[in-house]
Amino acid sequence: MFHLKQAHMKKFIFLILIVTSLLACNSDKTDVKQNRGQNLNLTPMEVVNKRMEFYNLHNFSEFIQLYEDDVKIYTYPDKLLGTGTDNITSIFKPKFASKSIHVEIVSQMNNGNYVINHEIVSENGIDTKYVSIYEVKDGLIKSVKFVRDN
Image (cartoon, rainbow, N blue to C red; front, side):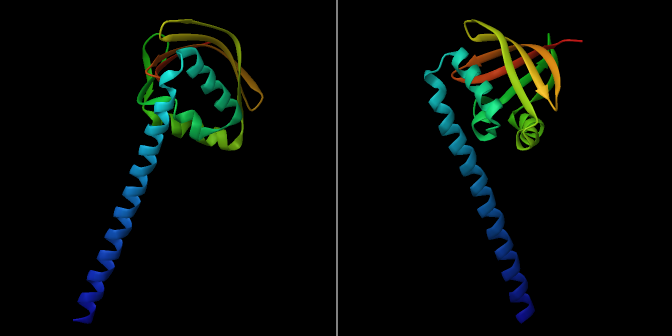
């Protein structure tokens, strides 16, 4: 009988740990969504420039808050590279942690909800030129289209 109670106790503790973990994850997502609301008063250009600032500071927690949860990333014009902030996290979080990347804005223009940057991205000493087209809606980056040099 003691073994049965001990088995139930282990399952109960395991269940408590899972529920606590899930609540913590939801709490983090709620905090991110609440923080995202702070961007509503920013122009699309200001949102993109904040992105660049956080990119160069390697501040991932602030950087990721500038994207919609279901952001779409393309190679211009319409080749989908990835969707969602989980995808962005898998790409950028390790690079931010190692501080291996930097971006320089060469020129910038906007048209309504769109910001177009000519950028030079340096990663581990290798420069790549991009034209990046950011679509911003309600203070969040909704999509990005990258045109790369060859």
